[in-house]
Structures are given as structure tokens and as C-alpha cells.
Image (cartoon, rainbow, N blue to C red; front, side, top):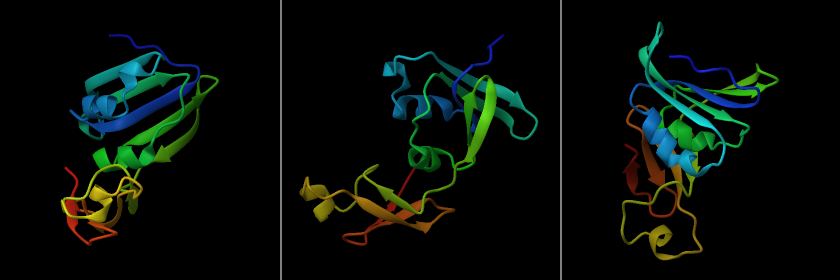
Length: 140
């Protein structure tokens, strides 16, 4: 299989095998309007198997969302067919508006003018505490 290099855009690399499709769907890449390649179960010396996403002519990506899905991936910004910079994604310490609180009575769920805001509680278990009601929410 041959996948050519891109001249400008993003390469999301070192995605845990099987999570590439989830990222593809969460970022709504099918509706992007730019060429996108999703490679799944690619052989990797470091990881055994990995997924890779290449997006041509597009560089605006939500790294917080990526960090919630897989905090070990890298985002390579491509310019003039070369890696211009690498962004190492981590689990975000604060998350705003990406998921809802588990507490059905939380003001963040009831008031449309309130943005759900969470602070990292336990990185290993990927759990966050709601800023408004202090409910613990685990991101799967």
C-alpha cells in the first residue's frame, strides 16, 4: 500500500491502534472537504500497531479533544512537504464544553449559558471534577 506525502496539513501519528476511527468521527473529518487518509493497524516499532491520520491543507485541530482520546499521540504540522513542528498531545488539565457532567441536576446541564468545565482529578483513570457541582466524571 502506498500513501504519498502531503505538502501542507497535519499528520496525526502514534494513535493507539483502533482509536483512529474514533478520532476521525469526533473531529468530523468526513465533512471537512479536504483529502483525509485514515491508516489503521500500521506496523510500528515503538507501539507494535498504530493508526495514522493525514489531513491535507488543514491545520486547525482541537488538541484537547485528541488528548482526551489518546494522550500519547503526536500532531505533525506539515509545511512545504516537511514537518514544520510537532505537537505532543497530553491529557488536558482543564476541559471546557467537550462533554457533559454526570450529575443531571448540575447547573452546567440545566443552563444553556453555562459551559461545562472540568478539572483533571486523576490522569491514570482519566477522571475529571465538574467545576460547578464537583461531580466526578470519567472519560472513556
